[in-house]
Amino acid sequence: MTEDSQRNFRSVYYEKVGFRGVEEKKSLEILLKDDRLDIEKLCTFSQRFPLPSMYRALVWKVLLGILPPHHESHAQVMKYHKEQYSDVLHALEVIRFISDATPQIEVYLYMHRLESGKLPRSPSFPLEPEDEVFLAIAKAMEEMVEDSVDCYWITRCFVNQLNSKYRDTLPQLPKAFEQYLNLEDGRLLSHLKACGAVSTLPYELWFKKCFAGCLPESSLQRIWDKVVSGSCKILVFVAVEILLTFKIKVMALNSAEKITKFLENIPQDSSDAIVSKAVDLWHKHCGTPVHSA
Amino acid sequence: YLEDVKLQARGQLQAAESRYESQKKITQVFELEILDLYGKLEKDGLLRKLEEQKPEAAE
Amino acid sequence: YLEDVKLQARGQLQAAESRYESQKKITQVFELEILDLYGKLEKDGLLRKLEEQKPEAAE
Image 1 (cartoon, chains in turn red, purple, brown):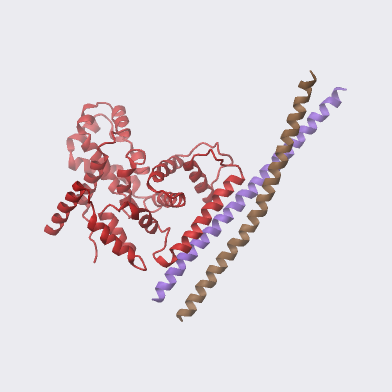
Image 2 (image 1 turned 180 degrees about the vertical axis):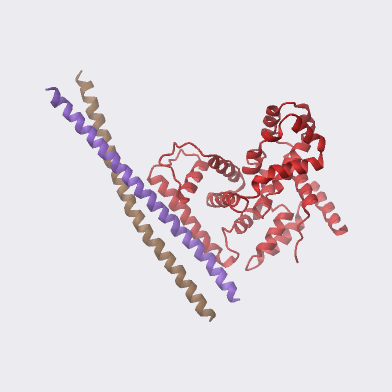
């Protein structure tokens, strides 16, 4: 416990002086040197610490199952993935579904649709709610992942994870949000209830799009580290922290509509602090994952 | 160690299979597109015939 | 026995590769067909446009 608080103190210190996560980065590098990557340890690491940017795409690809645990196979598997990517991209060009003018995230959406056997007959189809989610996530992912092949694969697998692994959990998050907000600040929840805002909160933006388009990508990726590595519950605490951070503003608003509108467009400058506090709050309520030796 | 080799092989095989599966999906999409284009061509052909017949009918 | 497993894995991977290759051949044939059909449609469209313009030019 004392060791932990000491570590926390140091992390905070590094954060302040710009050396954040020096030791974390080293310990991740050790994990990544294994011939066969230990998925469980990588998960624990990502649950506990923010991933260093330079390793984020690699770790996400491994955790999402895009890359197998064996280093030796990575080149071969990426070769298959790249070919698959260009095959599908080319196919959409052949049938004139896309052109040079098609925005990249729409290209990703059509590729995903084609691969899922759900390509509509024409590009001017009405978007389904799940397409909107895909586009929002792809748009944020574009800012986080430089390589377009990686970006497509990660977006797809991230969305697939939401629809499979988290399918039963995500609908329960609004209830959990209420519960934790009540624990942290009962008055704030009462205010939301009094305004009738509880049912109109931007749950779709929070728990389906995972805050894509709500928080800047530089902060968002630290939350997605947790989502990718197995916890969607972090999303609840981000929502709670947003409410706590803008408490004064929210308490001053007295209609559900105004509250929802404000929460959908929160100021971006405090997002880094929101994420840090949300992670702390998550650890406080759900425990800090133990880094197994 | 044996399990390890098997696991590694499975990782590669999955990627290869997925590349094959998406190629299959592409074939299906192309098939539909071909049918669609033939449909359009026939409609076009029919329209042209109708247009060609109009002047004759007017004579 | 290990060699055996490795050999088997390689065999499976090769089978997946060759299935992909042959599926890709099919796709390529379809692709040519699609290009061809688009070509025809465009020619048709062009012909029709020319025909449509003719009467105007005659006016």
